[in-house]
Length: 247
Image (cartoon, rainbow, N blue to C red):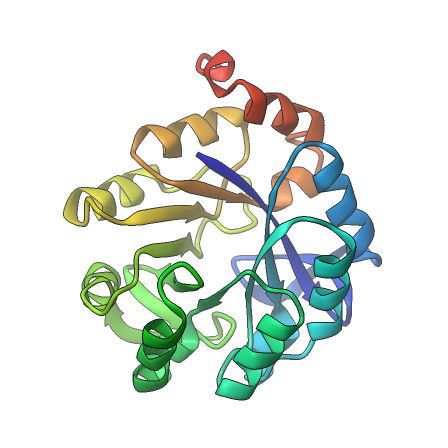
């Protein structure tokens, strides 16, 4: 299972929110590149980079941070937040994103998102399925749609999506453990899906839980920034995940 740390950006700074609430913003580092290099130095190969300013206003905003991280590290970056047009997508890829995650656009402009899937392929276009009480949330989680989570994912799998990042908003930033039961249900209904768990990863045992139900990857944020999981522990986990089975 891939280990994917997250860097969330507001005003060019590395922050975390609780349950996606912008009023809970906490700045952890004013230099995202420093954070990204620390990840890389501990054997991490992947990064989930979120433009929270862009997610809120509906237009890619912190693209210079993306460009800096992509040009000065070898991290494989999945970028999301504020991607609402072909121009936004072009900027993201030109600035070094290996992949992009579409969340709100998949709800609000499905025709354009389907066009991106057809043009760039499932290797580069991921679906962001952020759920709040079983419904898909959009616009930086400031709105909840009427779309049911699993039917929403199934519809896009039929349109070519193969990888989904599913965030349980109630768990995000709370350090209370992931919703492994939810991920198990999704995978049982869509066994071909490459599912990335996001929200609530707190301990190394949580990585084992989401791996055990079949998740292809796990995104970690606050647990790293609060020091609950150290980068050294993640490095050891990446090298030998089996040795942590009893954690």
